[in-house]
Amino acid sequence: MPRKKPISNLQSPISYRIHVKIEGTFAGNVSPQLLRAAARATLKDQKAKSGSLSIVISGDKTLHDLNKKFLGHNYATDVLSFPSDDPTSSYYGDIAISYPRALEQSRRGGHAVKAELQLLTVHGVLHLLGHDHYTVKEKKVMWRAQSEILVILNGTSNSKRVNLK
Image (cartoon, rainbow, N blue to C red; front, side, top):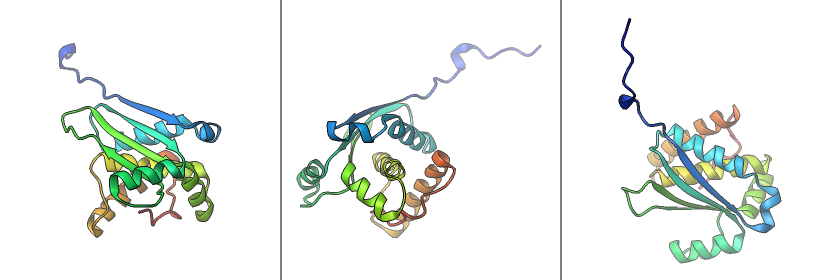
């Protein structure tokens, strides 16, 4: 009879803690579970180690203020990511999403705001994990990852939303 592996050789399960804060005005419009599922799917797809991150759903004013303060851009945007400064930390960082931007973009794109919020969450988490889209090559890699994760989440990609920053 084969010997069973000792328990000490078993790997620890990977776990992700996703903190979600939805500002009051948008609380009834956004499912924290939807955001957590999108973030977890991204972390799992990218084979991220155990860790945590935070997602905040806010309004244009907050995203405008953050965009101006940290990036020097004097306008609101749909999603911002703030990776942890400590590469040894299990905290990946913070993501801020503008609900009004997500709603506007979903209407323009002809898809549900739920799909836009998933996309923005996936996009934000990919940035926390080091992805970017400054070059054509980086953009291709990041967009492919986004598409694959959205297929995992929904069984289909959101092909109408291909020109995300």
